[in-house]
Image (cartoon, rainbow, N blue to C red; front, side, top):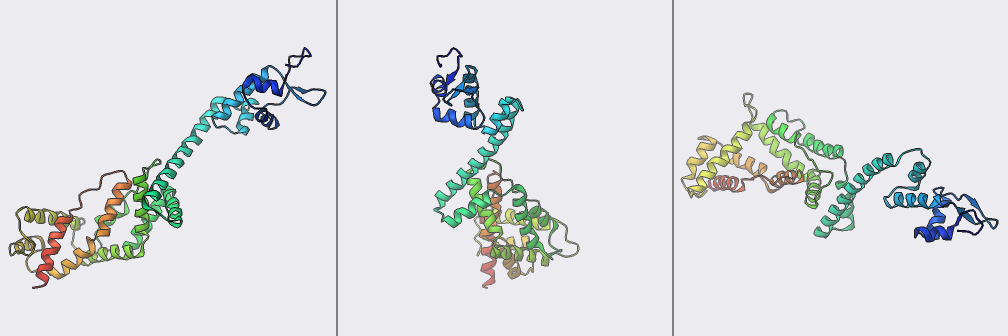
Length: 305
């Protein structure tokens, strides 16, 4: 306190009273958050005792992350501390979500040993909005089904309405799964394989084929092949003939069925279904790879006869 009876404080005394540095106080003063009451005859800034309380408020607001513009508005009475705090909470929530995505991307990069280019792509894909993710999936479905109006409506509906719901706070595993899924559905080779599967489905459907017939066939395949495996029937064994006849009907074109199964139940298609589940935070469902493999092996054994 200067010894002139005014009770005013120099910037050095204010610094000692609050524990802040002279440089910090001078900066806040220059920015209008703590204007001096007056200046000494030598041009030095002087502050009132009330400046200590004001300075403590400025420090608290700054430590909570508020910018100086918001600090000035609070001090000027243009807004309240509560209003600024509420707005800042929203901003912090967004920042926290962004940081969690950043952490997830970096975890994926570290685990994969990715290059700088791969990291850039991963970061871009991970930060897409829900609408942008939906657009990527919709474009994939549209290309796969374009012009194939005879395809099973149930399959079209399932693919078109498959949700890809990456949460605001994804785990590294969810980010990894979404990046792989996005890369997969934008891969021209994968799109060709999936379209070929739908083309086979459309070719098989007659005018009176009910919706959902394809799914019924898949379930029946799993059931019959599962029973055959439980009974120890090898795919190449004569007993497998009866299983195939029950599944396909006597006299069915087994070579054509084999071609369709090989087109529809490849590793990538299974992985696609797994990734959808992982992105949505679910455990991947049963793929029934053993049952499909048994039927494919049985058909291949008979194709060589």
